[in-house]
Image 1 (spheres, one colour):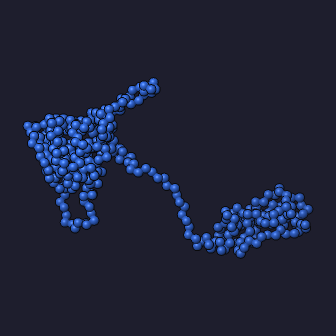
Image 2 (spheres, rainbow, N blue to C red):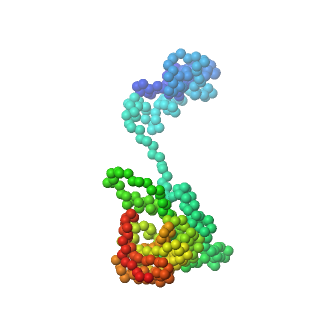
Image 3 (cartoon, one colour):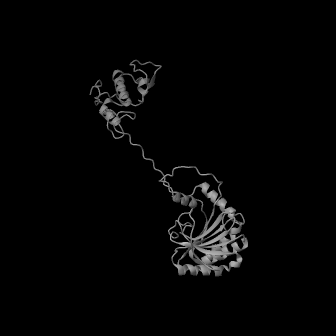
Length: 374
């Protein structure tokens, strides 16, 4: 093969410029053919504009020693023209994409017309109903204020040595209850009176639902227990009702039943209401005895009782026992009679007792359904 033979170059398409490797190969071949007797060919150089992609500089065919850089062609490599591939090598910076398809004019126009597909970012899916750090801090602050010693939770259960594995501590066995119970607390703060303005009511506004949501948001879950020992730890750790702020409430309900009339278990029921005036000692005693009677199933008539509430008010304090129904008169009267007997109260103590029907509207007055003579 003659040394002056030129290496055929694959047509690059309309408007396609050769890559750097192609240019370097061509320059190297030309240099080797013209300087056949020279042992070391001069290192080829390219104009700087060839390496400045995206530059606005005008293209000039003239090169200078000040505005040139060395091409990436090794000077020590000795390769005969016959050993070179007849097809130009693929450039790393241009010529074809990752799939090997050449960037022709039609290809570029097609890419411009195709809409860019945004990259899908993987978003971590977290757990639902997880309270924020501020909510956890506020809850701990409330529970500290409700405890008699300023701690955030009741004492830990007693630990004993595991009889099956000596040296390993375990929780001491406790006596289980029939139901699991939850203790709540809430405070109804008195807001300053502001006169109402004459406005047209919005027909889409549901005042009842809004009030229910606000009420539920104000409830604080103190804790949950399902054993006798855990019940004692909670009630010995909490302040008695008489030590709470005015307009405060304790709620003791079976777990799964919210202390609100909108709950399905309470919606068709009523409550026995025991009232007393300015008698903190009697209020605390009745609440403790009632709580023990509830968890011990001494008041229960089937599964009629949902829970109990103690409310500290400025004029008349109240203790309530909520029931599932309002029409089972025999069961309700049996619960009322047991309540009077267990609490050991009478009219001489300034006690009032009556049954009230549930009305799912907090602004309406609850009508009495029945009344027991003490």
